[in-house]
Length: 278
Image (cartoon, rainbow, N blue to C red; front, top):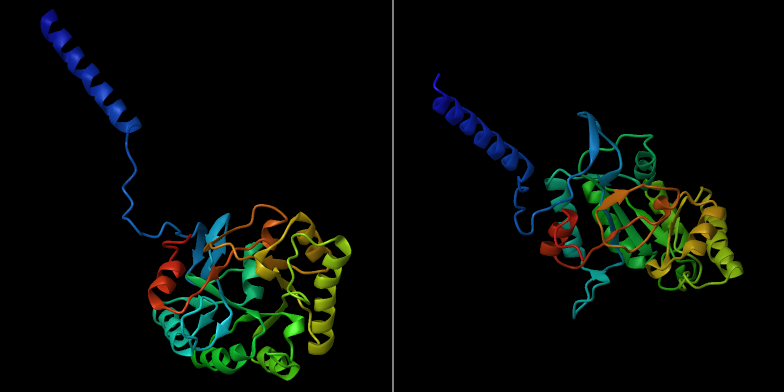
């Protein structure tokens, strides 16, 4: 082969190699459609029965307060009508309501959970949760965790008998402190009282272990976490607005994020799917 042709062949091969190399190392990721969910669970799919979470995983913990009609609209109120629509949407779209016990076991890698898991929680122990939310939960075969503020019992809140009825139906009762004060700035003795006394009273009156804690207003500090751990709680929830859970260390299970739900469907659907979270 004449030298001229050899040089041409070598030149073509070199150019081709450079182009392939440039193309490989300069690929851009696929563009994400605006508003699309980027919260696909990072989990091992072990069987059709469910998933075993690993690292970051999708498991929204929803939080409600009042289930009652309020006009003008208030972010702490969800009307029974909208609450029913939200529960129906979860049911119709293949979401699985799991208990906090199931979530806790899965977070520690001890149990599988269904795909598209949802945990429902209620704060404060308000009476309208029992009167308005509880019948709707039963209608769809759902259960929830109710975090009880102790100074609310029998004072605009639920009664002991109502808490026992919730518990008998498979719902979990948790603590929301005694006085609902900011626990991020409390002295040690007050932190101890708010976490331990609420647990003691609930266990004494309900005859069951109280395992989970909810920080009043979502406020906490390193000392708060330590007090809640020392009181014997297994996990605690915040008001950080996220659908993904990530158990990285011993404190992660005590700073679980939740999604605060409003009185409307569009934001509910977006937030459950991990869209437009602030």
